[in-house]
Every structure is written in structure tokens, then in C-alpha cells.
Image (cartoon, rainbow, N blue to C red; front, side, top):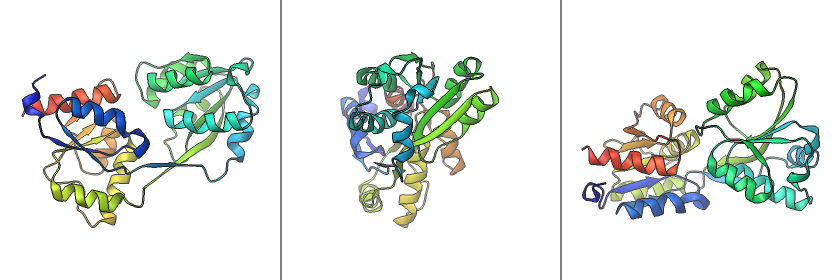
Length: 259
């Protein structure tokens, strides 16, 4: 990898403040300058009641789907509060989207039965849909999310309970941080989810900044995020494969090495 093409490149990092470290450290290792403007903040759901009820009755379900490390962090706190040991949920099988989510789940005590090859909802559906007919599935996720998983699994004959584990909101400081970052200049913007695209667009609007940013390359973590970028008239310059942080960093490096 030719570091000369990356040295000094300023890369916008849009992850939540609690999740920037891994990506920022990887960028520094390539001699890039991470410019951290968190446009996502993880906050509790409107009510914990549905989540608490589901977690304290895990034995009602045949499958539990964990969609992200954010989901796992949210439910681990509630499990600890109610002394719920997920490993004791008799008959419960667990599916996780992404190796990072699966590893975190195992660390908390979940026995993970299924991890799709690709870190996207469609890959989970393809792997799981032949296994859920006649079962009850608990899907824990962000309050606003695509309905790919519940719609497909219901069509496959499953009863799906969708429960909010957390909400994504835009931090109040995001517009001003974004304005300052753009004044100093950025070479590329990294996107780790569709929410990071929509929230950055919201922050730009609040700061009266045209979106997308002229002359800035968009680097996407995967096909769903890429489509959201296109929906905002920002064609991604590169897309990660696989859809994870190391893949995103490789996509960024590949983009600049070809310029």
C-alpha cells in the first residue's frame, strides 16, 4: 500500500463518539488525519418497557436477532439490571449481523448460532429464511430501521416481534463541528451506515452547508449505505468489501492510490 498517496489526507469520520476509535486509529496508521464529526448519538428508546419485557421472557422465542454492537450494548445493560443470563434461555437460537456483533454477543454470554457471510440485513435473511417457518423471532434494533428482516421472515412463515433497543439521534454539536471541519478542508467522508448519511445531510442543512460536499469523495461501508448516498445525489467513490471497518479503510486506500 503506497502511503504517499494517503499522507495528510483529511478524512471525515461520522461515527458516534463512542465508536470513532477503531476507524480513526486505522486512518492514522495510513498517515491520514481523521476529522471526527459524530453525527450519530445512541440514546435510550422512548420506553424501556417493551425491551425489558422481551429480555425477561427470552424463553418465549425460538430465534433472537442481534443487528449491531449498539444493540448489544443497549440490551446488555438491561439484562444486567434484571439479572438475565441469556445463556440460560432454553431453546433460544441467536443470529448476529457481523462478526463484531457476534464476538460481543459471545462475550456477554449469548451462544451465537448463525452469522451471515455479509454484514447486511439481506444476507441474514437469505441465510435464515429457510429455518424460521412456524417459529417466533425477536428482532432487536434501532427505533428507525429498514423493514427488510421482519418483512422477509414473516413471508417465510415466522412470527416476528420487533423491539426498539435504542435510538439514533443527531448530536446538537454536529452542525458547528461540521462547519469547522469543512472550513479546514476534507478530502473524503467515510460512511459506516445509512444513518450516518442521513444524519450528515441533516447536520449540513442545519449548518446551511450544501449537501453533498463538492470535491469530497464519499467512501461507503457497503451497498445499502451506497444506495442511501445515491439517494442524496452523492455517488460513492469507493465501497468496502467486505462491509466492515477494515474493508472501509481498504476501500479508502484503494481510492486514493488510483488518483
